[in-house]
Image 1 (cartoon, rainbow, N blue to C red):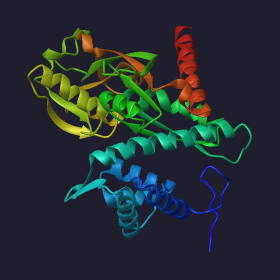
Image 2: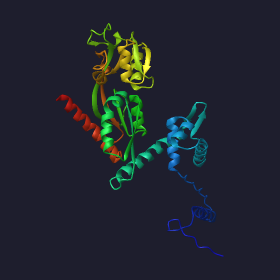
Image 3: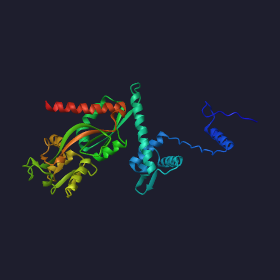
Image 4: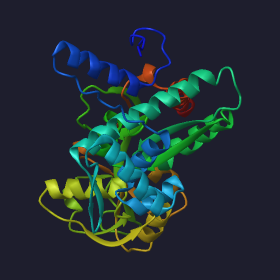
Length: 344
């Protein structure tokens, strides 16, 4: 009995296993070493999104909740993924999970895969009204509380097919997240390591010290922050960007701030300050808005770090989905319009 085999270059419908057998037969006949066929893992988008969620949450249970999957299903999916790749992706410990070196590589590629999918959605939105897009933004405290609410509200009203994930982060963390592809857009302040990233000027702002009426410093208009480090402070919650920034400034000066109370927002902060609980560090734009309704006075800080330039941080504007590019252009133009309105 004889068989006729088609070469791999032909339009054959033979399965890959058949070609592996052909290679083996050819190799044995010629006496040359048989090349082992490498199997290519099947990457499931659900698995990649699950892996991203677990990596960001640092915990299997929270990753499962984000993915709307049961913990048992998540464990099985990760086990199958590790077996398919032939390597460990996660290190389990009592506090959660950490990524192995292979896991970090997979995370980077998974993020880029989803970025490309967003680009695909963005490019196709011009042809279909049924596609949903999403933009992920990390921003500092000032941007989230003062600049973005009105701007994003106006933009979302005209883009019903786009959703936004917005999280408050420290400026160095924002730059890192943009660089590794975890987010599309960052809004940060100060000088941070941003090699290879695009920086678009957004707005200038200052940090000021708010004190209650009748305070020993209330007769001053400008002070150095060193004059206030021995006072009691009212602060935002420990996870806020401005709290962490104030702690870092104090640490650089070799002191620690005596925080009497932590609150969840600037308005609560100003109410505590007017009640003589302490003084507080806040953006000038917030102070201008709130000192009209609270018995506080905003003192200008002479320190160089108090002057802050907010910037929009991107990996590459033209690699973003079309709707994300539109959002960046809208934010820049909105700020130009704001400056113009303020000068009238």
